[in-house]
Image (cartoon, rainbow, N blue to C red; front, side, top):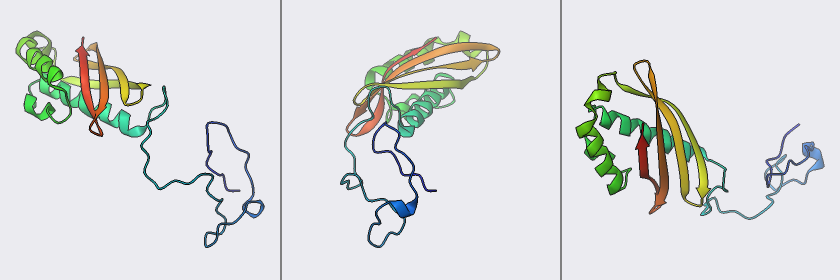
Length: 154
């Protein structure tokens, strides 16, 4: 049995390949349910998350923690963060010496939720030594790329 991909959130029944119409030159494949050129300009629906969004959230939060720890320069955040976030991280670098004495920050968990087209909220936790701290962020699409628009560590 071959399972066809759902056209929507509704679950479609499974069919044998012989019961489906055959696309010329592609035996055993179901015909397309809608025309699609492979390029999508839509964003995931509210609450849905795609793997690219989650990967960006994880990568950017790891980068922030490395910068706050002094393992990377603040300038390395410029491609992924808005200027207000850069300013906040610079302040954390200058004033966070007491936290750094607990040990390096290690990202422990990340959860991402789409709240509007092109906007997602991120929350998670990171460990320093034997303590767990919280992190929250908002990421937005700017010029086709995800960027950190807001950040809160504690």
